[in-house]
Image (cartoon, rainbow, N blue to C red; front, side, top):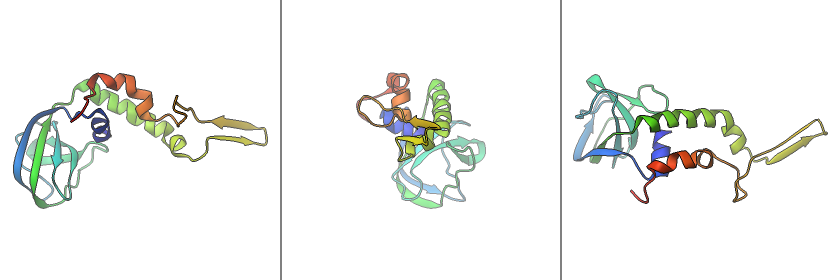
Length: 150
């Protein structure tokens, strides 16, 4: 989810960027990062994305906090050390909870339903007439970190 939010903001909060040839072996990558720091892999065939670095080279996926399962490869690209503000991380957790609660309804093809007059519902729509998504719901709170371009 953090990667989707960063893409939406056009802001990965890049602190340092390291370019060159990188090797991922046994699911780990050697990086000059702090325990718990997030990083972005770009240019990899198998592992592009945002991850969290832990002491000893242990990597977790930011979405499910499990081992990331980085696939072994050698690639020429970049690894960017990120400095994501704690407020963005907290908002990411709120967005995840919102998606867990309303995601199925947003993805549903039904806009309204009336079952024999017993109950009915309709999806919330924005000013554009489309179903409200997490991007619409959290837009104003995310705007302070938005960049015009990468």
